[in-house]
Length: 242
Length: 194
Image (tube, rainbow over the protein chains, first blue to last red):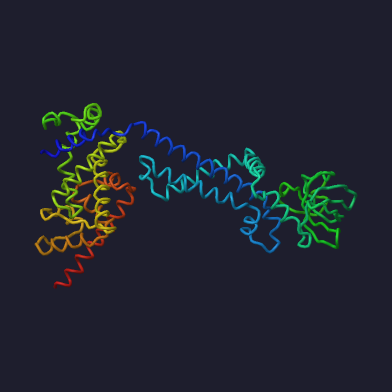
């Protein structure tokens, strides 16, 4: 029998039908959706990483004997790094499985995915999405230590010259501070640089660099807002505090 | 009932696929058009007998039929068919003989001029050709498959990329590396003989 005829007879005998085109359309749709979800995952994770970098205050704590990487790892919950990697890997796998995905070299695939995640991550970060995302994740009930909690831990070492908390009262040369653990501190601010953005009003959250004199007594060299450096450069009191 | 060669010749690849989906008999045109080339390819990349190669081709065409709706015209039809056949041969060979794939050239295979030119291999004596055949046989599979597709199936980089599902840059790199390895092998064995 002619091989072509044999094949047709075999198809007819077994009543074989081509798989529906909807199956392939659905498959392609699932792959592209997975790609989109992976990119969003990666972008969300990257925005939180940016937020952690912003909150790390590298320039302020560089006098302490820790590298920037150590500091970042201390403040950044591991889950976001893992999420970014998972997002990237999933995006790579899904893109590779599209109809023409093999055409792109792995290096280009990685670069393109990374670039999209980073760009979207920056947009989410600028839009304030990272803080909301982290707060939402914190509320889920998982055993999760947030960036703010980690930051509080880093800035709760008065013996190493780092203190933080809420202002309770301000006099001419000193202020009363309640740290995040609830302990009261009397802080000498006479010679301190005070970030221009600070109003030094009761209720304001701040962080301080200085020297612990004794239990409950701290001499401040720099006072910064809790949320950021407040100003790029340090200077004597008066230049910053109007 | 299969269609005659004349009826098939009048149809383009796209028409054959469209009509096949309406009436299976048209699918025989695809077999008539590409079957002989693909059969030769199976024989070239495996040590299967003529009969086993034909059975393998039948299985591959059944698979093509089942996946006919997956085909997208952005890809050359011949590349898609070669891809399915290639994968079918590799998978069948691995099932029967383990992981190691052994591509073998047919006895009737003539060495294309493009290959000897690219290797700057002037000798055309029987002994030299045998040496070249050994050089190809000695290549790791991933290099051997690009050499076979490029020189024996006369495919361009884009087609090879579509068949093996690798980027064109990788095709070029593998081909370049394969040429270097073959040239080195031929030079080495030629020195040994002398």
